[in-house]
Length: 490
Image (cartoon, rainbow, N blue to C red; front, side, top):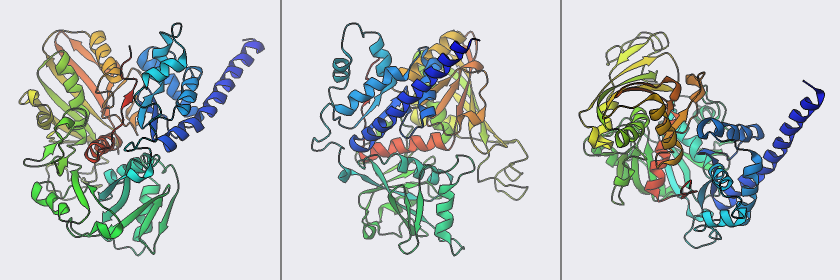
């Protein structure tokens, strides 16, 4: 290769780095000043590094079969920064690709103004979310794996302030004298998800954790009805119970006896008449009168969106769901007594067959599949990321190409784009999906089709992906909503 070509290749890379660097302050200002979330084909780009931004652009080629350059998106970002937008979620990647198709017929500024007409100049409109005084209080009851992941997401999404605001966590008093510091340390460092992106300090005197400027009260209590939240300045709060101890209406109603509580969301399947919500599927069932809801399970959230998409297009006669699930804190490190069958055996050393209610739970969110699915689970020696294998008999014949093409389009352009992701790489393995915020990721290379019989493999981060779904439910409960632009791809 000639020196001239080597220099040209490296020079092009440096130029793209320069443009990406210029994008970072625009992305940050849009988020913190106007509560405008920017993304590239569904992937948020807030707080991304230069390399992270370039990789987000590169990823578009895999899922959308288009090249996307920072030279396409940077001019759009500059315009967004000048339009004083009301709160919105703007996919600059999709805007750029849409504009490429019509760029010879319309100026970029006119195109962007037209696409975002509803929110242009709306940042100061009364009742919009452009001021920090309209945040919605959230309390985490419990601070385990899901609780800490929820805390990270809530802190990350604080934006300009007019969003969900984590105000407190409620835990039982530990035995250690430095209990508060230990809990802060677990938030700061995570063996699976890495270090907390930001700064954390502890206020021992006031029993609080300050994370990226978010003042989080740490409250010690042994039962759901033991706290007066108003004495901490917390009111109309949504309590996210992630302990899993109370799962019926009687137990969860105890939260509502506390002053300052508006509603309760359980991060496990609810019992009895409690609505089990899978966001994107049946969240339309949430009403203003609902005070207790469940966010179902991580597996139910992972498989239900894909099953709905398939049932809408092909129909599902019946099928079996096999879950290959990472071990959980409920299992033992070494062989020891456990009330559940097989679960007493060492989790890091064994594959453990166990039952799952996820297949039956799908019917609570998607009644048309009632009685059509069976399910089982295998716990495996990995700490995070699970895999659901959907073995289905469809209503009509199809092919691998047609089925994958349909699910790719669903992941990019449908109402389920926040729930379903799509990957088409022959090299991906479970750790590649750590941190994924989609409920489930279809692995196109693994899809098998024989006539009307289809086998699909759906990866999911059973911690981060599920936590993102939980936050989406809480947003709806709190009345925090972001319209996504562009609304169509044309």
